[in-house]
Length: 598
Image 1 (cartoon, rainbow, N blue to C red):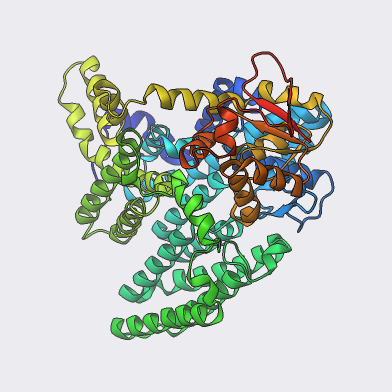
Image 2 (image 1 turned 45 degrees about the horizontal axis):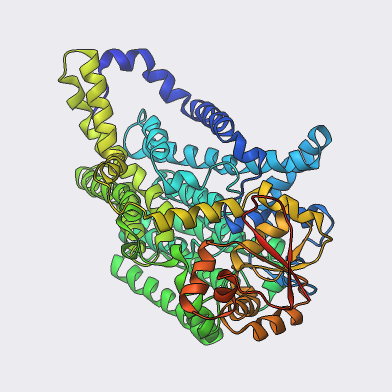
């Protein structure tokens, strides 16, 4: 533990209250934060500003559940009708959203209940995250350091965005489970810590496989701790039980009908059987627990080899890309997804604010681990340092690791701030102390990065990029899409990234959304817009589309024009008319162009 204390007078006044009632105070802080963000983002809540395609699909999944669709039927019948398409999610994250809608709709009606539920639901995992961070900081830094976790969390960018109103997709809950995992790794009560890590990992895997690398890392850390210290057998045993039992229960209770096949992109029999096997082997290791560390190491290696061998021999199809998409779709779409690209392939304006806090947190965690080398907190800090280094390295694979990397950086950054607290005693006047405290927080939180970027105009967006962003934003709004309901419900052929938003805000159906299980339909949309007008018409006819809807200058449209000069969309965008398309009026000033497909 880092033993720098606050000034004695301050400790006497507030220390006992902060220590004894830290969880209640954390929940009170969460309530204030939640109220603030609901108020601040009320306009977005009112206009159902679900900016991400996944958020729109999540709401559609909840609507289907409340309308009577089967619990294990996750097929969306309004994308690629009439058969629809299966998505690889589970219903676990649907539950709080659906519960909020059911509770609120008798008082405010269905539409307003949906808006309120989408605004409130993302803030629920925030409470879990703040409590888990507080527990970690109390164990590793100081019993009074937990408010630093809240402050540092609020200073993040991509991490905080995962918990904002209308961000109803599953990432917030997975990040909350990651925070619980870290708290369990640092818990001095070994059985409880193992239960937290095992249970949180099982919940995360039930939601989706996005955190699978972090789940594997958590298991490796627990196994390494057992190899080093035989006394960790209780943590390992309870972790193994929680992991295997929780994953089996998650598969039984939440795996959709489609996920009961041998797919590689969700908690299917592939991963359920592998995780249960891993849990059983880890439980066996904990029960054996030989005296010699070298023997424990050999047994752990053998167990790991057995799990890897089972996976490779039983499910060889899953050794490649888990999405199992065609080479064409991977090249033209999946490899081009922005968040799937390494952080160094992003503009500096985007990359630098993401990586700053993870680097600061890693420095702080390494320094705290060194200082705790003769203290009981050594094991906890070693876990945090290993996890932080792993998360930072994940950014070199995909930028979507940014939220997790920032979350895992909070303990290390808090340790740096706590180490520097004695420096605040030097200034004599309260104003100087306040300025020093603000400067210290800006440094350890990485908040200086956006200031530097804006001051020096680093990678400032061009006029073209601003125009594309503006067009994309306008076409996704409720006022822009609502006039489309003046036309009878029908199948609309539109951009892939517009499909989920269109079916959420109107009564129309669409062809595709950006989901790999919808791969054939995605390619059909690409082919239609990039090939000849005759091929475009044939594809639309095959899908039964009777309306064409485009959003000029939307980001997706620029790809069609850039990659297929002279293709159907390029010619349409230049004003060329076709005898099988009849322009349809929408509303004056609408960002859309609509056509009846003959």
